[in-house]
Structures are given as C-alpha cells and as structure tokens.
Length: 220
Image 1: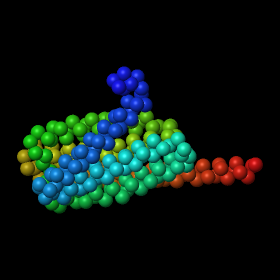
Image 2 (image 1 turned 30 degrees about the vertical axis):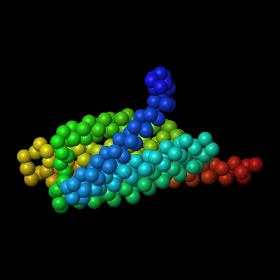
Image 3 (image 1 turned 90 degrees about the vertical axis):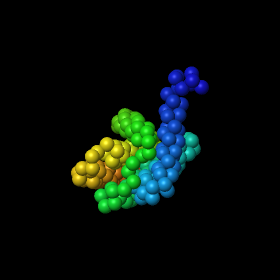
Image 4 (image 1 turned 135 degrees about the vertical axis):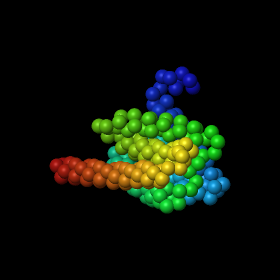
C-alpha cells in the first residue's frame, strides 16, 4: 500500500480526498457535540454545514466511481448542482454570521482543541488553494466540483478559527464583534459569488454542448 501511495498519483489523490471527507465529517460531529454542551447556535450551524458538505463530497465520490458510463454533460450538471448546493448551504453561514454579530456566544473550543482546529484550518486552506489552482484550463467538471466544495469548506474553517482565536486570546475589545462580523460577511459573500459563478459557468457550457450537438445532427 505504501508503495502504491508513493508511485500512484491518482491513488494518492483519492486517499487524501477520502481523509478530507472523514475529517470534515468528524469535525462536524465534534461541533455538534459542542453545540449540545454549550447551547450555541454557532456550533450547531458549523456542525450542520460540515456534515452537509461531507455528504456533498460523498455524492461526488460516488459519481466519480460511476463516471465511466457518464457523459460530459452529466459531469457539467454535477458541477452546476454543486453550485446550487453551496448556495443553499450558504444559509447556514448567514445564520452563523448573525450569531456572531448579535449574540456573541459560544466561540470557545475547550482546552487544547483550539490548536487542533488551527492546524486543521490552515492545512485545509493551503491544500484547497493549491488544488483549485490546478483546475485552471481543465474540462474535468467533476474534479472542479469537488475542489470548489473543498475551497468553500476551507474558507468557513478560517472563519471558525478566527472567532475561536479572538475569543480565546483577546482582552474583551469592542472591535471583536466588528472583526468577526466582517470576516463572516466576506465568507458569506464569497460563497454566494462562487456558487453563482459555478451555476453561470455550467449553464454556458451546457448550452454550448447542446448547440454543438444540434449543429452536428443538422450537418448529417
């Protein structure tokens, strides 16, 4: 197995994606437990978001395993549906931002967990940025869908990390709410814009393929 991990790029990539899915699900469950313990809507929204994204990834993995018999159009539609999924899940981010601004409760991770969260967040955002940059110019919409979800997941992780770090190490400054609110709004708008971009891009590509197929049939 170790030899295959070293020599097989595709296998190594799939393994990393699988671990990412598992860690995201575990992190979602962890936040769900914290929401029950602290009564925090913030942790509840994070839990819902991470678990939902894990199911989204799982759906894409399942599609990839069956992709041999799928058309290019089906892959583009998957990319479009992933954009719609991100827009729907952006509701959870919106509720989380309102929690930050108006309630200001339940941002602390117990004990040393905050350092684990920090490691998780920085690792995810680093790999997400690297991976999304690799999709430039590619026509593999299934891969683009997966990496787009990973990027949004990572941006939410950064928001969660910021709120926890500020709550843990600040001295009660009045600017805390403003800082968290601004970051939360940026993440919300970024996700909104990214989801809309995915839908528009896929819609144009679907129209192009259908137009090409139509012209091909007319030329026969």
